[in-house]
Amino acid sequence: MPTLIAAPARIPVPGGKLIEEYIGRVNSKDTALSIAHMRSPAGWSEPGQRPEFDEFTIVLQGSVTVECEDGIIEVPAGQAVITRRGEWIRYSTPRGAEYIAVCAPAFSPETAHRDS
Image (tube, rainbow, N blue to C red; front, side, top):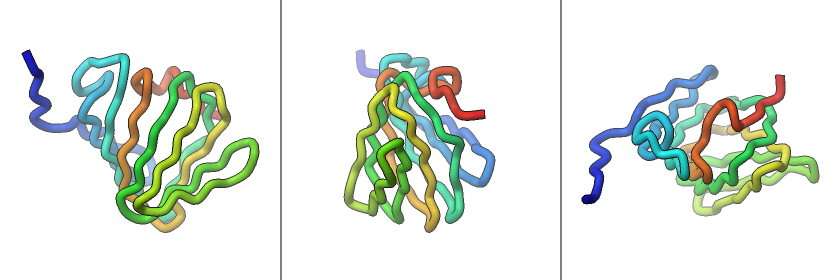
């Protein structure tokens, strides 16, 4: 039988970012995949990471900056970016952004391996 996700789990993040997880470890207890709606204010950034998951990001508004070992990618609204497990990456939203993030397997802080 299909499972209705009536509402996302709201996960506040330091710096004012809001994560609304629809599917994943927190809201639906799924470990294979996570799908979240993100809203990041201008100037938000997170530590670099070398995750154990692939991440597929679709930018709805604003733009997301993705730093990697080979350079910097600017991802404006209407575009997407794929980051692969094992790659070092760092996300930021210098001008603010709204985006959808899909992680496979599902995101967890333990498997993100964030820089200290």
